[in-house]
Length: 128
Image (cartoon, rainbow, N blue to C red; front, side, top):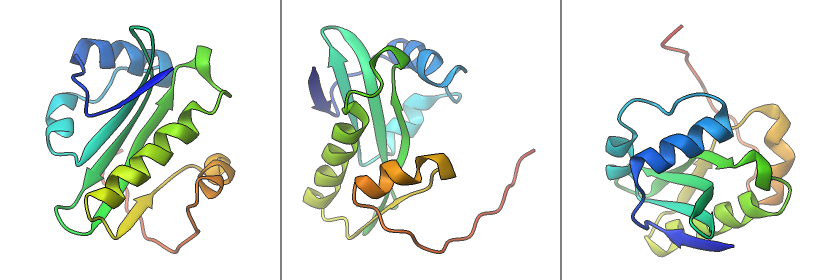
């Protein structure tokens, strides 16, 4: 398994990975999303993309873990944990003071094990 930060990533490769991992097509124009990100971390098995996490950024001292995903054939091997660990270290090296993550309740144990503490936050749904 190899890991990379900000490596060249073909959008069609990411789209195919997204479909395998999320069971749906990626958001429209994900290239624009990545262009505004602080970094992204990927995992590969040879040439196959098997893991991804995006580190979104507010341009200041806050960053956000988004879209953590691992190919279904590669889950339960510690890949997501390593992706998040590398994302945390990258954010720290870039001067980020606060790293946020939102997640479904079923993922609380995973993110706590990665070092995230619970916090109060607000959320407003803007689209149906």
